[in-house]
Amino acid sequence: MDRVVIPSLARIVADPDRLPWRPLRPGVEIHVLYEGGPDDPAAAFLRYQPGASVPRHRHVGPEHIFVLAGAQQDERGRYEAGALVVNPTGSEHAVSSPEGCLVLALWDRPVLFEPSVT
Image: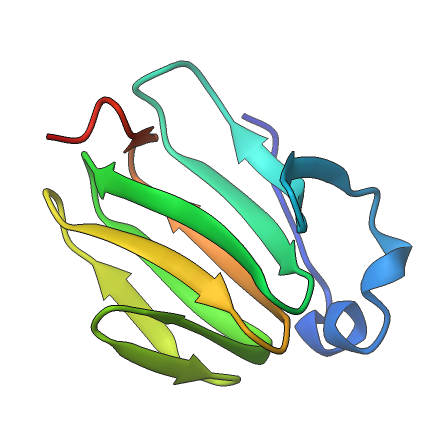
């Protein structure tokens, strides 16, 4: 992995269109900072359009979510800009953002989406 430097998260929040985004799920885009193989860590910015969601999934390693703008929620609560959420290994949830949001996500290992989730 090459070194990744983000000189200003505030600039990303102020102008997220400066990043090259690609579709991840309907209404959710991703800008990958780094990723490796199927068992390697990864990091990315995720941008949710209002009303977008990510279906239920399981974390096979810790996930760190830093909400940069807007808010996202899951069955455990609502997380507004400035929140840091750490989802532990083995946890499961579905995520949505009624008004849209921008997050920085750090995954120790990739997530498993249904039907893999039991």
